[in-house]
Length: 145
Ligand code: FES
Image (cartoon, rainbow, N blue to C red; front, side, top):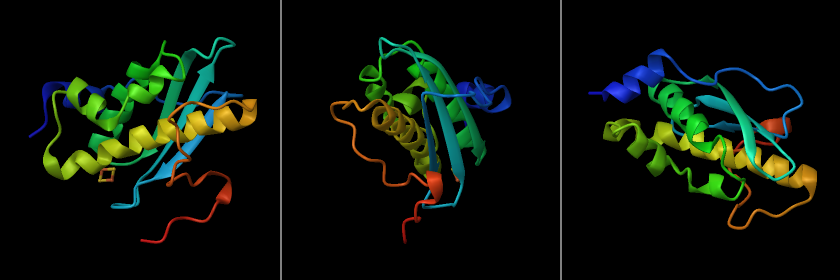
């Protein structure tokens, strides 16, 4: 059911943890299952993502997609990081079963939420980045579904 890459990233997830004094932090919830993910970005003065870590209270597919997503955004600029969509992550993992596709959205949304946080803190605009809907950091009201 799962590709070898998914199993590998699920069993040995990369970049699990927290970054102290992160440049941007995003926390999102998956509307379908209630799982939660937090993403930390460390971004240098050239807007390049130096480091990225995540924590998740989610299923195996969420763990695997976040792990791959952190690998993909590292070394990218904040603008380039927008290309790390859930589709790109799934492709990098050689696919996910259809019922698990929604899990991969958590990683994409968490990256966007962390980028949004970074942009707000630094008063910059990241072209094409929209305020993440599922950002549940800072006690913002959760979406009604
Ligand atoms: Fe919740 Fe996969 S079932 S993220």
